[in-house]
Image (tube, rainbow, N blue to C red; front, top):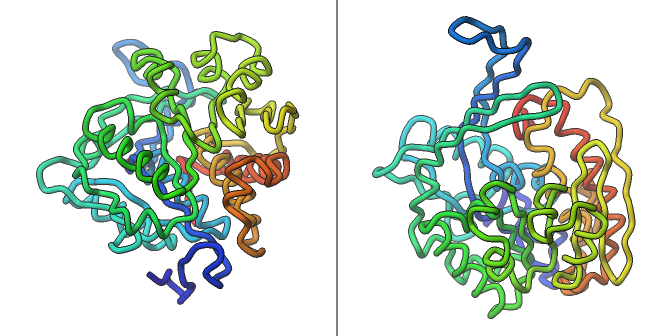
Length: 335
């Protein structure tokens, strides 16, 4: 399937320049509340409120497309005004949402998901109604579409509830069978704790890259020191990138642990929402041989999956993209 502008999709070895990244997971409407003052019980507090396209997986898809990757998105929104707009927004970013390349299904039986994102300075809390994300059709990701991908990325949100879990587990099983490398983001330390860290680690066994943040690495390993957590997780996954927010990240790969400093945003940091999603997108673009400019030949995805690609260079691309993300409101801002 061609991207807008006539750029063809494809996989390495097919004579085409850009590998296709498949992404499965949530797409939602974010209502971002930038608090200007502390809440006053039973009274008013001032804030800037912005509705914007969101969903962790959809954010990864958009940032990856902006980085130069071909991207196919798999997920479900409601067949309502918001869902149709979110679908159109992804397509406008060059993300494939139609079969056969991708599949953003619109469900008549469930509303589009909505998240209230409360931002207080550099911290945020989220109130979530995942809506149609909780009931995707089991055959959402056909083997043919997955086989056309050079890589698949999933978030843990897809494992935490029964409906998307079935799709995610099928996708992981198909990746193992088809030899498609995949990556996973643990997503939420609280939900991870409720679901069970070992259960999640078993779900994503065989992942080429794991993207926990500091709290998620602690939840998965019981280690307070993120370096120790990264090293422990690296015994199970070829590449582990622990996100440390303004402190950059730690990358464990090939028996080595390296720190990569954050990049100072070019301007005022406005909203941390989606910075981790941009980080994952930038990292995968770096592993797959595509820089922020969109230039470069497709990398050997088997080398990337085994850790033979340069994970430190990928992490540097990741922190650069994350620095761009904090300068916009919401998980991805506008093009």
